[in-house]
Image (cartoon, rainbow, N blue to C red):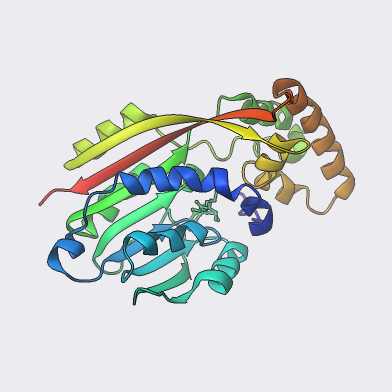
Length: 275
Ligand SMILES: C[S@@+](CC[C@H](N)C(=O)[O-])C[C@H]1O[C@@H](n2cnc3c(N)ncnc32)[C@H](O)[C@@H]1O
């Protein structure tokens, strides 16, 4: 059993604009919610809400909604609470609560359950979908986005380095701890099999990052968290590991005259509960 990785909201938010765009793309595909048609405020849950900045974006589409962000990380929840909790300008309300997505069960009827870039950390999450769909109002929506970049050099090199003879005893199984997704056909099959009207797609974002070692900087906010957490008590080991990983990334993602290209594939699903 692993301890949960410690998250660093500031590091994560360093690439906020690239990380926010897929959420906006997901939002654009969410149909009108039952609450809107009935003229009442929507009730919304955001699973794995992180620092709350994308949760807050939900208020732009549903200004009077009551929105709760759920997350496992005390660090992320503290950041979300500090910057985003409370009444919203449109008459809605935002709050944040601790919850493990692996066991979360809707505690009241929701019009929308949304999750952005979080379910890849939750082994077996498709098994939770029947429970989550059962907690939706009729016509309610489950919408999520997960990174699907795990065979890309950034993530494959991390897994290989963790499993190398030098590091395997300390972090051997920490390099691929985030690989818990289905592929797009798998989500489509699963969600339609559960009786939903499902819209599933994938997109590769050809991101152009700036600054020194930007891919390392990106991964430090996410996939590297379990490794950094495991080596937390040994700064020399952290420096040695990051030095080796940095060299591998520099070779895999050379910097060009306009920046460092870092292609990133993501899978999206919007599933409406029928009836
Ligand atoms: C990459 S961040 C995404 C945060 C936010 N949704 C966003 O798009 O900016 C992943 C988040 O998932 C959370 N997480 C990981 N495993 C979780 C679990 N089992 N239950 C709830 N949250 C979890 C982490 O704490 C982290 O805040």
